[in-house]
Image 1 (cartoon, rainbow, N blue to C red):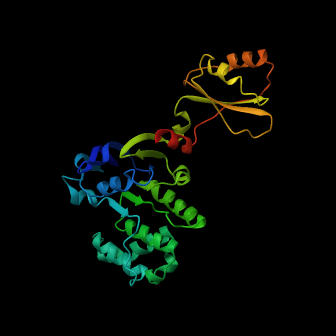
Image 2: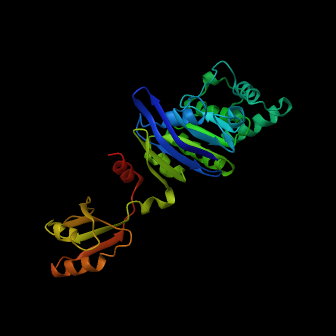
Image 3: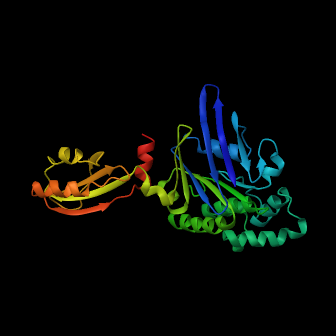
Length: 307
C-alpha cells in the first residue's frame, strides 16, 4: 500500500504539489495523469524518497518514509523516466548489480535474474550489452532493474514514452501481470494509456489532485448525461430543452448523420427528464431518433477538470 497524506512541496514561492492525498492498494494500478509540469514527477520523486516534501507524510506499507526510510525503501522498485542503465554492461550484469544493491542473497541471484527476465521478456537478451539494445528492450531492462528484490510497490515514471504501438501493448500486458501481487503506480500524460491500464486515476493540475476516481466509476462523473439525436438540424429547440425540469445544461455534439441535431443533456444523478423531452418533441413534431445514456470519456473529464 502507498498512502500520501497532505503532501505539499514548495520551491520558494512556487508550489509544485499542494496538499496531495491519495491511497493505492495491493493489486491496483494507479495512474497519475496530467500535463507536463502538473506535478507528476515531483510526486513520484517524493514517493520514492528522492525528494523531501515541504510538509505531509508518505506511508509505504506500514512504514513512514521520512521516519523509517531504510525499511520503507526496501518495499520499492522505481523506474524513472530515463532508466539509469550502464551501456557497457550486459543485461545479466546490470541485473546482478541491481540485485546486490537490493541486498538479494548472493546464492539466490542467478534464479532471481532468470525469474525477472522471464517476467519482462528479456530471457533471450541476458548476454546482450545494454548499449546495443533497442528502445523497447532498454525500457524492459529498466523495468527489470526495478523488479530486483521483488518489491511490493512498483513506481514508474512515463514508462512507455518513446515506444512503438506494439512495444506499448506488450509493456502494458507485462504491467497487468505484475500488478496481481503488487501495488503499481505510474505517471503519464497519455490519456489512452491510463484508460487501458489503470484501475484508478488521479488527475493532477497545477500541483493539485482535481480528480480521483476508479475507472469503473468514470461514467458516473458529473451526474447523468443523455445523448439525444433529433430529426432536423434546426437548433431553435435548444433553449426550450434547456428549461426542462431535470436538465442542467445542453450542448451540441457532432452529428453522425445529415439533417440530425445531436445533443448532450447534462442532468443531476437522479433526474428523469425523458418524459418531458418526449412531450416537447411531440408538440414540436420533431421525431426522436435516439436517446441513450452517455458516460464521460477520460478525455472529457480531463478537459473539464483542467480548464
